[in-house]
Length: 126
Image (cartoon, rainbow, N blue to C red; front, side, top):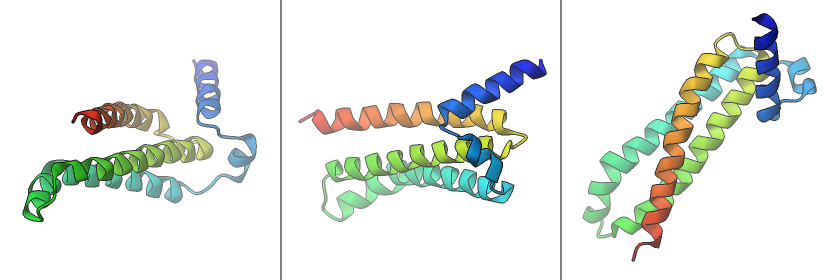
């Protein structure tokens, strides 16, 4: 079982572009936790903007809802990049709960990709 886990860790490290040099330097667990916090914060801001603020704020400002889509695309992109880098940090330091976070991160990434595709489709609809 341990050999399989080590092999899975190696595969994930390659997918996340984690080099042996980065593992040797081992950034602190605190930096990895900060990256996780940043990722979750981006996702929370995206949800707040998309579902609470922009649908009500833009009409009050006299702007069309189409203005929201590029803003949401940028936030989605930042959230995806943030999740990727937090995963990299967790694998670099060998964080004990990295596989649990991977499940959460993968779920968030799937949802962000789906929202991004939806937003892009909204841009192309006249």
